[in-house]
Image (cartoon, rainbow, N blue to C red):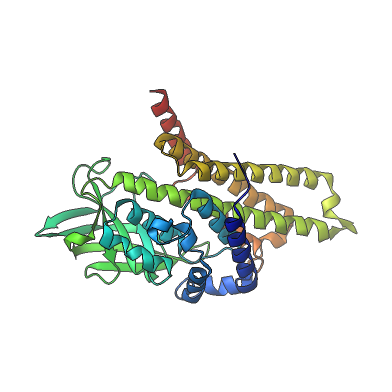
Amino acid sequence: MNFEHTEDRRMLADSLNRFIAEQYAFDARDRIAKSEHGFSKEILQQFAELGVIGALFSEADGGFGGAGFDIAVVFEALGRGLVVEPLLGAVMVGEALSAAGNDAQKEKLGDIIIGVTVAAFAHDEADTHYERTRVSTRAERSGDGWVLHGAKAVVPQGEQADLFLVSARTSGQVDDDAGISLFLVPAKTAGLTVRGCPAIDGGRVAELTIDGVKLGADALLGTEGQGSATLERAIGRGVLALCAEALGAMEAAKTATLDYLRTRKQFGILIGSFQALQHRMADLLLEIEQARSAVINAAAAIDGTDRVARERALSAAKFSIGRIGALVAEESIQMHGGIGMTWELSLPHYAKRLVMIDHQLGDEDHHLQRYIALGKEVAA
């Protein structure tokens, strides 16, 4: 396997890293995260102009990338800058539109790519426990259209979304794989209530109350009752994006910790000369490289045709990122000492983001169990 990025990806990474370093310093990011919107529409527009969003989609969808390594390059840079703009929703909703949308629905991809439409992925519910097929929200036919009832929880940047991708059950029981349908729901639709709140790691999330939301026949994405496979594809892209984002955050935390060890003195001696701290830092560097390998493996597998191999690689990466992310967060703060808990410092924000990434789209325990279950499918 060739581990070197193409020239186009290197140029994209360089441009994005430079833009974040110059325009998205920690103070600016902190103001954006604490703002009413929870992100900057101006920054999102600039990302679009830089081609960052377009890199997440294939040429057939109006972009110029769309491969696993394109997603990894972009989100690693976003993680390094603690970026809160809603690009995760763009990746996941965009993948669903690409996989299952008709020609008219795919036209929405253009507005997502140029940053005009903010798309949000609304699948999780209060008692989902990360299970993809556990959907309680229901959709019933009404004439030529649909009526939806239910609720969705913890939708990233849901308050400012223009378009939601909502999963709902059109048949079967709550945990059935069959019977799940996907719907495109504009934010201004009557009966849809969006209630936002701040997230502890920056930005905002929202809860959706879906009370008799009436939709036309054109709102159904793909075939009725067969949305589970599309959901899996969309979630898979989201998992890869989160893993790459976590890798970027780990690199930033590592750099900050190394700088601190090289400059902080205790009793007139640089603490980086203490052998115990050197050993801890060396262990941490090895773990981060293990996380990088897991992300590379997932990025390489996500475009493959073998579903089980793809999903196992994604779950392995998410498990590794969950475990190693928590370790990096804990060790970085401990090696900083008391100042590591100072909210004015960027490090605790990276630590919180790493811990929270573990809880998005399935935590460490969930993906370990999923990896084992997928292995049994192979054995069978």
